[in-house]
Image (cartoon, rainbow, N blue to C red; front, top):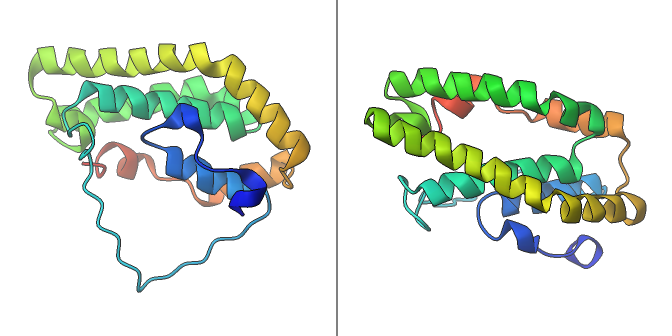
Length: 169
């Protein structure tokens, strides 16, 4: 698979690079296998720390870049709406002390969190031209799924809003 689709995307050097690689593999027609006996120990936030705003900035940046690289245009156009819904759900969770936002206590910390999200998006927008070129090349040379199949794949494996905003801590 790696010979066909390449390795981790360099612009996603941390956070989401594994998801992007897996998605690229699926879009190239590869299947994945579920191995329930496998054990993975993942220490969330170990690279930069759970309260690192740089970590959240990179997560947001890479979320946008993954969508730009692989989502059908019809889903990309919905992205601002779902971003707003996700932010509102995250804010509600944060008020209740749940999810990622719940870790950031007090107004000053919440402002730092909001700044990190906005900075991540701004950083992503600067990388959109490069990402779009990679998207076109991947779609032309490697991708085997239609836009409809990609939408179905994303829909089938989507994460609920509650899980995303409240349980991600």
